[in-house]
Amino acid sequence: MENLAKRNIELSVIIPVTERFDPVQELYYKYKRGIEDVGMEYEIIYVLDGRYPDVLEILTNLQKTEKITVITLAKIFGEATALTAAFSKVSGEVILTLPAYQQVEAGEIPGLVKAIDDSDMVMARRWPRKDSFFNKLQSRVFNFLLRSFTELQIHDAGCGVRVFRRQVIDEVQIYGDLHRFLPITAHRQGFRVKEVNVAQSKGDVFRRIYAPGVYVRRLLDLLTVFFLVKFTKKPLRFFGLVGSTIFALGLFVTLYIIGERLFFHVALANRPALIMSSLLIVLGVQVIAIGLIGEIIIFTHAREIKEYKIDRIIN
Image (cartoon, rainbow, N blue to C red; front, top):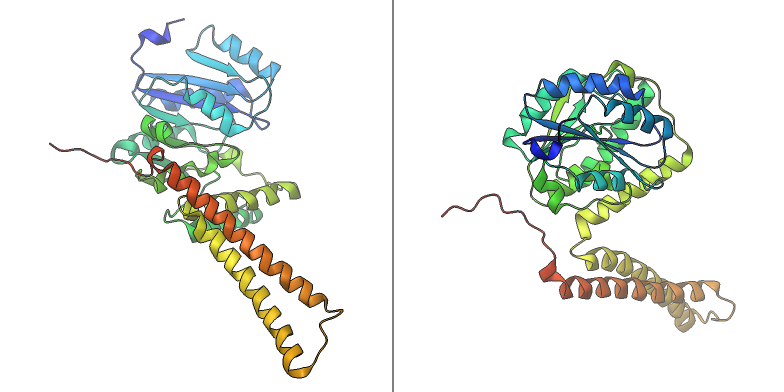
């Protein structure tokens, strides 16, 4: 097989294999046709998040005739870690991520890659959606919540088909399950992100109902992104707001109870409300203190934190 190191790679294609995947060989050839139509020298990197012996065997056989690289992780670490492992091995300046299952028609790939000309990152939006009403409802609610606290008008955060420049992964960190929010964190850091409508794959229309724990994790992910977008550099604003609200509530109840004692001679003994209000005051002070500690940490490491992107330097 041709040595990848000797080829001038322009496009790096990453396909993470997690718990959900379609027939590997069939999907590979579909993707390959779309990738070759781009007209760029490319490499394809599969990264297996855990041990998938059947998938590994198929990919190993494909390597005999196809120019692909296979990375296997020792155990399941999550898709964000799998992508990060693949990012460290890419050679191209343009990176395309594709899911190991059908989401968009492979023929849409050339248009997506071309759209990167005037952007730093291009997201695929499956439109029009062919899903069931329940799938559409889930997607609309999730993306509406994302749009409500970010400046990026995102409509399909669940689509894993994305094209971006190498500089994005050099400067934006992902971890946990935050890979699906990469466009938001990249946009927050000053990169140009846009969404392009593409045809949804016919194999992506089945009804998706997840376990209750998945929906809870998605809500927690939304909370994490909300905090990262709004308060990462200014934690006191978040903790101060929450702490001040709790403190004010506790103080109000305490003053009310004290007023009852002074003016209406109501005994303070056997008043659970007094204990509760006192605890609220203490809790409010502690939450504010957490925010202050966060501010001190941010201040101490401010020189190490890069929160901007230089677009051009003109001499």
